[in-house]
Image (cartoon, rainbow, N blue to C red; front, top):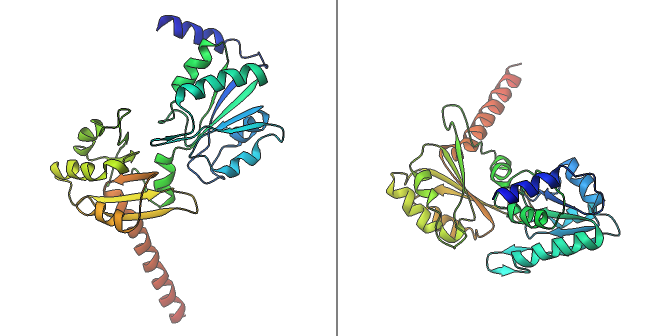
Length: 275
């Protein structure tokens, strides 16, 4: 561990080498407008772009006209390349072409396996820079007017995976189910029924739930319900992966906002008629 950290420090202190570089870029939650200006600028400078499954294809238009663009996406059991093959491609591309951009959905450091690619780059003397992105865990609920925190409703939130690297239900969910915080679950659809049983066992059967599939994109689907019925609701709505599961009383706030707006419009109409 000490040797790896020392290697990383040496690399980060020698970022003036323009020849080879790995840029880990967060592409945001799906809407191509939800990417940072810096991400676009760095993407334009890359010689090679390696992009993931959850990246909107429209973002590839920001790549340089002569850039080499390769799809390296991994979705559930359908992998175009293994992580080991992606790591090898990063190294070979950096040494042959120079600047490699790894375009990842959301933020590179949130379930993006960025650390493995940084370690690979470090071992091969390739400088690394991180361009943070907007995580779907935050942006997708927000796009549905669901705040993860709200005074008097939820003071904090969890972000957890529903599925471990071994394919099993994450043990962190047991702790999350005992919390009063909002719970945001990524990669949880294959375990939706066990998740609902777990939350029910902790007295949360009537807690509101929202599931948003492919949030912030034209393919977006939304299902809302409660722990006790969300499995059936999601099935009836044809909801599948990739999706964000949001559990907590904040899920009811969009309806509250809508009700307030309707009330305000009604008051405006009455005031107008009186005048």
